[in-house]
Image (cartoon, rainbow, N blue to C red; front, side):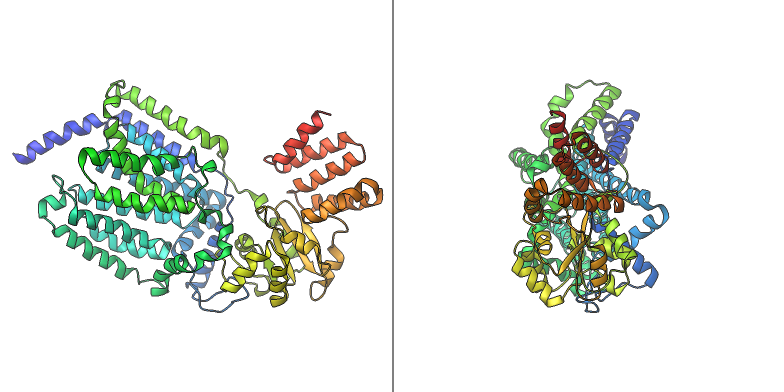
Length: 605
């Protein structure tokens, strides 16, 4: 009889909240399409090249590397290959379908993570159509972290853990033994495994000190569930040692936090810096960082403390504020509780909405699109790779002209260099995407970007034979100017992505002699020096024009060269030719704001 009454209570509620209504299902599917569209934009971050290369190496070598085989200065030294499990998983997607395979990975992991987030949201008691809009908002906060990164699979694992624990807390099935294989997968796929233990810790504290809820595990069994969760946590920690590197893998995130995070090189990495509000005003971050804690505090006054929510907010909100890389994890953890609080807070307003399910579904779909539009405008959807951000043509030059030896590189180019040339020892990067190397090398690398004496110390230490630098970097990076001013180096290739230098003496002497540009500068300092001379010297302009035309022949990504050619045309009083060069530059880089400004200036003449 009691079971029959329970079914009578459950069935009307599920009908009322729309969970089985075709209109709710249609709205949920539309929200899923919005989420897939949110993470569909061209790949532009450089790390995925090294992820793919390491995955390929694992598949071909049938082993996980335990020594440094990715950079040349510390080649052969003991080293951890982080996130090896993710890299092994992602390689088949690329091998089978190329770019489409990478996007399939993004879609599958994002949709899986937020499907589980939705299930957790419903477990918290947030029913109806409104949570679908909050889920889409959470996906917007996740958007910037949706590149092909190991945290994409960590997000799925985090969402599953939260669902298992919240389901148990709400009196549902106890699936906590599943957390043991989940912890094993986590440590082998991403260094954030410790966040899984922290989430479990919040539920342990809630089970031990929180107020039992009707139907919850604590209400049914007293405080025993807290001990069970402690034992599960001990098991999760124990199975985390089942990785190729043992305790060293477990210690690595704490090693970074306690020591490496203070190194100056990490100041240049955007995702490790505090969140930039100018880039996160419309993507759900304000709702999670400000709205969630505020609604949680207001909820405490009405219903008492939810220890899980409070502890998770105290952990993940500061992490996201201090380091943008944690914003995605905040979206996974905070969205279910934010949705519950919004539903509870605005239940009266929701009751005044149209009662027809299909009308509510239409309003929900419109809201999902409306909140995503600002992000779609800022970064339009698209499938592909932003090739002009990678040293594609520079590596073509390296391959064709036999550039080898001890090379220096901007660390963000390390992954693409590996993708192109590994396992060739004499073409390995100096530093990879993980800033591999000694603390002293990282210090010299960082300071050399702004002070020439540190570059000379680093160069004296290693006697580099070639150097591959990024053209697009932060404003304080003056290394191109320093090498440009050094007569022992020759600029042999350049385009919008990269600058390639060869040393005039030693193994690269012939490359330097044959391919050095006569006049074309690499940095701003040399360009500023040339500008007044170009105005009065036609022969110098002719030599610069020849250099720039060569740049355009060697690389499609040459908007900078087109802009300089336009300046030469203007010096020679040929505005029509200058306009043609600006148009050609915009064809190579439609997002170049400098070229757009120059075109407006020329149109006003």
